Image 1 (tube, rainbow over the protein chains, first blue to last red):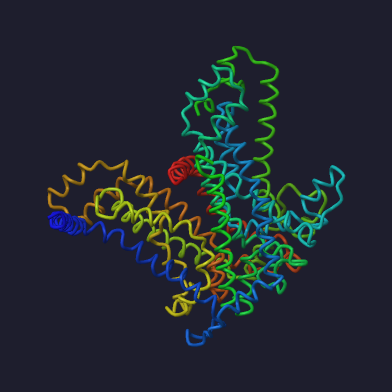
Image 2: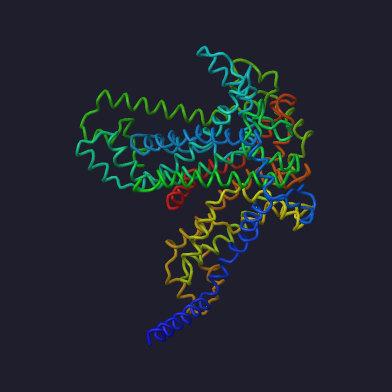
Amino acid sequence: MASSTLEAGGSRRQRGTMYEMRRNMWAYIFIAPFFLLFAIFGLFPYLYAFYLSFVQWDGIGGPASQQWVGLANYQSLFSDDVFWKSIYNSIWLFVVTSLNLVIALLLAFILNSGLVRFKEFYRAAFFAPIVASSVAIAIIFSTLFGERYGALNYVIGLVGVAPVDWLGSALWIKPAIALVVIWRYFGWNTIIYLAGLQSINTDLYEAARVDGAGWRQIFFRITMPLMRPVITFTVILSIIGALQLFEEPLLLAGGTASTSPGGTDRAGLTVLVYMYSQAFQYLEFGYAAAMSVALFVIIVVFSFLYYRFLGREEA
Amino acid sequence: MASVTTPEGVVPRVETHHTGAITMRDRINSAIMYILLTLLALLSIYPFWWMIVASTRRSATILTAPPPMLPGSALGLNYEQLLAQLPYWRNTINSVGVAGIHTILVLFFCSLGGYAFAKFRFPGRDRLFGLMLATMMIPGVLGIIPSFMLMRWLGWLEGADNYLPLIIPGVANAFGIFWMRQYIASAIPDDLMDAARIDGAHEFGIYWKIVLPVVTPALAALAIFTFMGKWNDFFWPLIVLKDEIDYTLPVALASLPNLYSNEIGVQLLGATIAIAPVMIVFLLSARRFMAGLTAGAVKGS
């Protein structure tokens, strides 16, 4: 008895669903391009990357020339000092470039305070770097970082600091790359935070002020908690972006044709630059695929850990 | 916002409303704030100014201490040398073509998808929408090697087809569809479409004749950032394009001989040509562009 009612209900709903689907046929046709293109140019490559990480392949021959090597790529990856160095460099750059989020939050708070004139000018100026080609920016900065005549060394020289070999020394190449990345992204994050701040009801601030709260209290007790979702969004984007840095390290530490990517002592070698050189210069496509899987796992773990411990409301 | 345009002076409005008087501390705070903002604005702009200055000079007058602050007179000479090193105008046309065609396709497919997600109530809609958004969180690095392989199998790395890998993937992308959905959901009343349906209009006709004309502001913003993204794209074209004549601007620029063996001004003139078009569009549309961007960014969280 019970089961037959259930069946009848189920089939009625089924018929309803089929009817709804047929009635909305055009909606499915309209969204189909995304899912088709994603299946071909997104999902398939993502899944195939895992397979490729178990083969040896020169990237030239067809699938028949791919030789199954099991875990060999991963074994050599984990004993490859250069790979570990590139992981270290990428994580170093991620941690240091996170500074741009702090600058952005502070700037957004100031710009949103209602005390600033020429706000539109400041917003546009901060945002301009993200609009420009990162290749062009890397070239501009490689001249600003010049050891003898670069503008940066000139400025620090004014306060008595000796010239720094920004791009040629193992010690300074990472700070130089980080500087360019921070310069490029702080304005972008400022605009995102500003949008978040503008969506906070100003009555809350007014009420807090009337109650005698100072700006510090307002910032930490009202602004920060309400901004948590926006901050989580930017941190996750920054994890994904910073761990996949490519243009800046490639061009500042060597160039596209360089035989020693990463510069002196490979101090500027990021995982992506190493992967690029392994695949497209040394034709080790299987090895490069293993590297991409490893970086993928690292990015997912970092994003998850952030979300789990800092990103959620109840954290 | 209002305080930007009102002629009330530098006096911080909100503060004075509550305290009734401007204290010395307010003035100092305000001064520190402006110094900080102005310094950072100058730091943001200076590299671009430097680029223009250096692109009009020869290395001999660039490599001085202090660095030159004003343009020189070697623009013509740098230009000649740039063209001697690369087919730079051809590269520019490649960039315009790739970014332009890609952008037009993105506008079409993303507004179509966005319309479906915004205005139809079909089974599985919310799940499919969530799935689509989730694909944005996958780090792109994973797909690079297999995508290159896929392009070879498709024969898209040969001849004139070598622009297809740059144009086709991503024409129906999650961000664009999300963006258009947000706008269409609030901009178009359901009555409008129902009326058209009663009149016997075809679903595609409704999209084309009723939806599309109304959503031009959102299309314009999407066009600007799609074009910019494609124009500046580097990694993928670097892998896909083999011949100098096929290069897009960033790839051509990166292939110039580097600092130590080339005139600095020639390189920076190349950088200027790569940056100028998108920078001009940005400056002309900065206000609307950023207002639109922020709306999307917050909803995106």
